[in-house]
Amino acid sequence: MRIIAGEWKRRQLRAPVGDSTRPTADRTRETLFSMLASRLGSLEGLSVADMFAGSGALGLEALSRGAAHCLFVEQDAAAIRALRQNIASLRAQQQCDVVAGSVMALGAAKQAHDLVLLDPPYGTNAGAVAIDRLVRLGWIGPESWVALEVGAKDDVQIKALEIETERRTGPAKLVILRWPTAD
Image: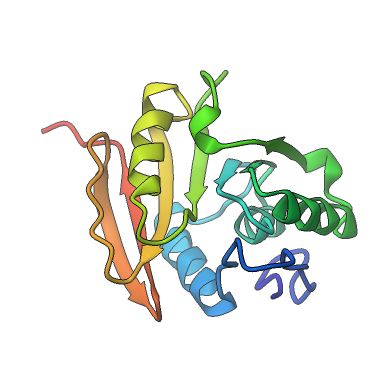
């Protein structure tokens, strides 16, 4: 597992020990960031939240591509260890905050993030539940972009946001969501 592009291109990332997390494959991550780049242009200066962070590969990729700051939320102890090691190996501590806990236990946000990345366990609907909760609590606002990775056969039903686009890539489906547009 490695960083695909940007400042830390080709830098290796540590995956958590055990099988309790499923790191996003390099090819899937490359596809996701290509989808985001075609909509956002640049990630320069963005505030990012990486929910269900695992090793932190998604958030660290965003930082490598110019994001200003990333909040990582993860509850698995082995994943948190790998995440902290990855942040340290990139010397990115000043750009990162790590919350050791469940996405579902987060309280109200101080402000919405520009980009929210979610890679929950496949087949659980945890992403949809988390997104609706994050919208209610102010983590996701009208200007936010949301990227959700689910299993290729998972059906995505989000109450609070509209699907901008989706793409299947191997065993995954990538879904980009936005605040509903006013008619």
